[in-house]
Amino acid sequence: MKKIWMIAISILLLLVAGCSGEESQKEKAPEKKEKIVSPLDVKIQMPEEIVPNQEVKVEAHVTQGDKKVEDASEVKFEVFKSGVKETEMIKGEHQGEGIYSMNKVFEEEGSYSVVAHVTARDLHSMPKKDFQVGSGEAHHHDATTAEHSHDHGHHHGSTAEIDFQAIENIQLNEETLLAAKITNEGQPLLNANVRFEIWPEGIEKHEFIDAEEKDGEYEAKYTFSEKGKFTVKVHVEKEELHEHIEEIVEVN
Image: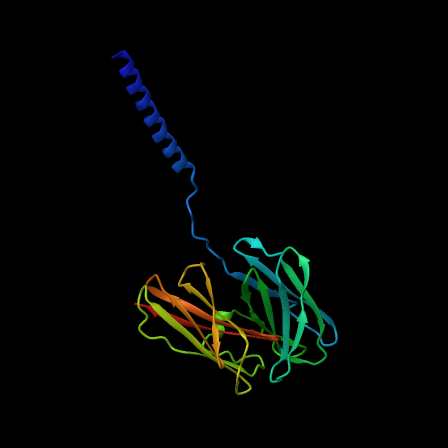
């Protein structure tokens, strides 16, 4: 009888040890957290007064969240004069501390704009700044990509247009077709790299969906898992062409 009791106690101790081990493993197992992707924040900085025929430094200060971006894969400055179709694309040089810069001499007075095309960590940002060279009322103006929404992708001398197909009656947790018709100089733009960037209002989590092409029309499917307003940004890239538009959609 004593032997039977000893066996029973041993089995009970083994069971208790096993349960404690399982609980310990559960405590140690890390919880899977959904990765939050913060958008790029790009600020263009340049002198307040610009004199013709004097070299000017233009800087793009690039951050993501509270960290400076030191590993941008591409930074270019697109410069153009108001009313002139031709643009100039200048490569930005990394200066450290999240700063990328270019130097340029403006030979003529007048109103100009510069667009900083920044690609980093699979994200793209292209803020715009208007400025005056020489005499005339200076009117520096920073413009984020959001302020150029609904322009159908036609800006700063480009002949490309993005026609984002309106989406009506988006239903929660149902697959939705995203479509954009893209033309350049009146012809369908073929073989472009097109992505849809999607994020809910007030949230920094961004998702990117690659689109498939059908004769200049680009499509992708996406399932909205939350109700409310979402921003859908269409990114179009092909060689030196970089365009985008933003649209607001609502999920019922």
